[in-house]
Length: 250
Image (cartoon, rainbow, N blue to C red; front, side):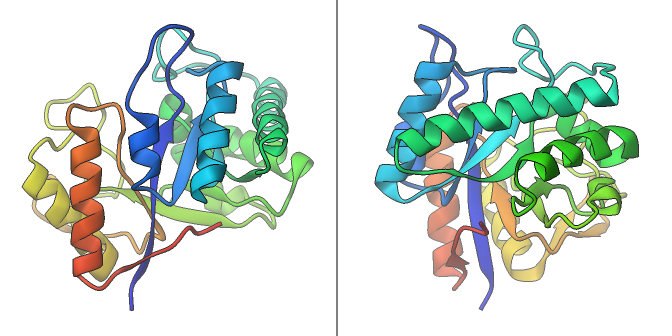
């Protein structure tokens, strides 16, 4: 039987601004990537999401980012490795402290946005993120793309591969840049079909029509797109109907 984790990015509001329906998504997913304040989120939002995740038995992950509130963490930044390690450590420790006051804990780490894509191809930045995780708790897994540079510099850390049901893939297995048309798949039927194929077969169709092997343990569904909750529910239902077991990886 295939086993897959469903994760989503939560806590991405800021102050009075809300983004996505965190509570509804927590009823669908098995792992929550909680924003730690650098690309979105604030202490109150972090606490609310952690409390709700604990109440529902959803695993909490720290979604760390470049310090880029204005750009939602999606702008490429040049940050020296020691500074990046310290900033990731700061975010991880903050969220874990809040999670523990609510009876939970951070169980894994996932980079966000530009940092996610950067560590997939940049060994120096990947090593900086890995160093922060190792310094805080070497038992914490890192969630990233299959074939990411993180795999090569993990140095004892557990690296877990994930896939994206609603993102287009290049023939090399990278995500198509959001700056390009078609980077996000909007057809619900196509997203559901891709999700089942990813979980059952471990593959996805690339933009050139070829096949990319993923073998991912976690499937990401985005919470900040129109109809996100309805789509997430459809993905979960289709996976269960296909005989896929839904289980957090951490």
